[in-house]
Length: 151
Image (cartoon, rainbow, N blue to C red; front, side):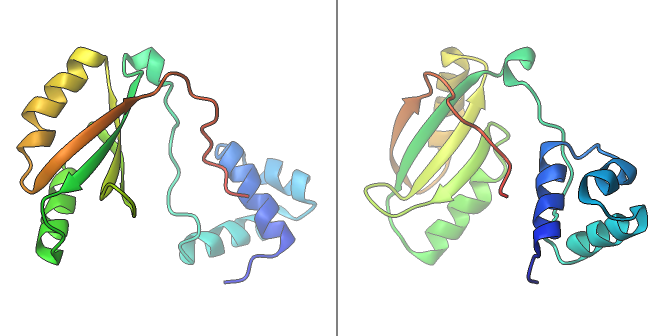
């Protein structure tokens, strides 16, 4: 699907505040409420809009400790990769898992309460997964930018 300028502006508006009503969106886009509704439904149908979520302030729920964990697997067979990916998906502390090139095979973004909670996660959950050869952890000092807006 090719996005026109209105689709892109609509996506921007929804990404900054998905609770805006179709009427509010229609005023910003100079479209009818029906046209906005139809565009949103089309974007949802095409899978461009995947979901609507609430963004939670990590510090208010005592989960402000962010760790980027670099992992090397002991082997790179499809079986090992698939098994690792299926296991890591089950770990609630892991917000993101990226298969990457370079010195490491995966980078995980892990969210926990504090260093003690991360140690517990590392010792009892992460390193108990099969096929992990080594890990290296980097701790976030401050978050300079964290955006979900694509357009």
